[in-house]
Image (cartoon, rainbow over all chains, first blue to last red; front, side, top):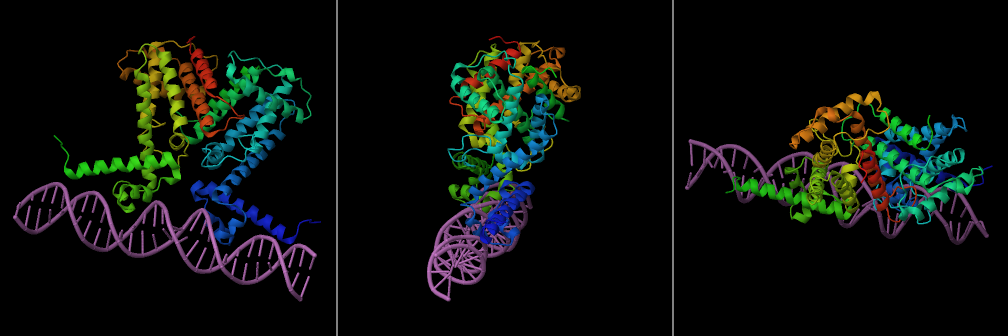
Length: 245
Length: 245
DNA sequence: TGAACTTCGTAAACACCGTTCACTGAGATC
DNA sequence: GATCTCAGTGAACGGTGTTTACGAAGTTCA
């Protein structure tokens, strides 16, 4: 049954335990509390043993961030699972609300993954070009892809796309179209105008901006219940894409 | 001439030196490098001496964040100084571009002030209700105030303001109107519809969102030169307020 | 002027931290 | 069964925040 040798099984198990403890410390006492010695103590081993698994504390934090992205993706996938696969607007709502809910429930993880300067949490290897975390990026792109496939000609927003962004947006458009294609949905490459790609990017700016401001408490005034504001923003974003709701 | 006693002068001097060294460490080597011992070493004193000035390292970081806000405000004020006082659109551009420029040039400071969870960088005393940092908030509010005063009936955006936000927005409206009044500009209290207050808030979401994404490198695709995108966003924000540029 | 008081800074100590290194002992391999 | 691999250990180094008792200088006031 088990292909792996005994040693390999134990190693994999320990590796999972390390990350689980690291996560627990991050959640309960913040990033600074994720210390090698504390993790080792909790696992009943000594700190130098962790160097058999990670090059350094920074390396561990990097991989922890990957784990967090994966878990976030799993959570968002679960949100999507209960939604009719043809109701794309509902899918967008679900993913965006799920992202906000997760961020508010896991502020430390959010800060680590989405608000770390690139030198404190060294960006992944250069081949890893999907930023925003591997798995989370996947979810985001998939939903954006479904949005495109189902709603082939989103109302182009009134704004003009700066010419100097054309090349970058073209590249992103290709990624989006590839994502749609990878889901098995046939799509006309001509269906996605650059204005729509630009609008998707601007939507991410607003989604991220709202969530981060809420998590970090940096709105310019005290807001009793920010949820209606978030929902209103989502409604506006979707309306600009032609979803009258 | 000097009212203060010798001891008081020395104390004030040391306090400035401490913060200056702390800032230097933050800029050059990141938040974790802001160490009591490193600061003391640089100043030629011992670490426990710092406890005569700050309750703890956390307390020092809090006050450092205040300093940073003040400096940011000074920088933005300088940007504003060279702009015609009746060209409000140019003032908005200047403040927003200045904010982005500062954030990109000082990522560590930006992360400390604008992307710290409230428990790692304990929020100021409860009487300090202007969030977003004392001085920076002032600048932001002042420019928003001038915007209102000069352009008394901004085109109300198409969105409906959620009813549950009315109370909070009313409070923010009063702050904005008070800020305008404090600048000596007479303004009709009826001149600022809630939709405009709401739009200002949404503009902050977008401004902050773009800048933070850029500082943290979390745009969904690599962007060669993000500046045109930022400017385009500003243009759109101002257009929605009735500035056709 | 000199005693009393306040305040800044020190040295020593404590309990942590990341990281390196030589070493042991158990699993894997042949 | 000998050999090799490798997870884990214990000791050590230099770093950290923080507390404590203490000295020395500035300030105040009789």
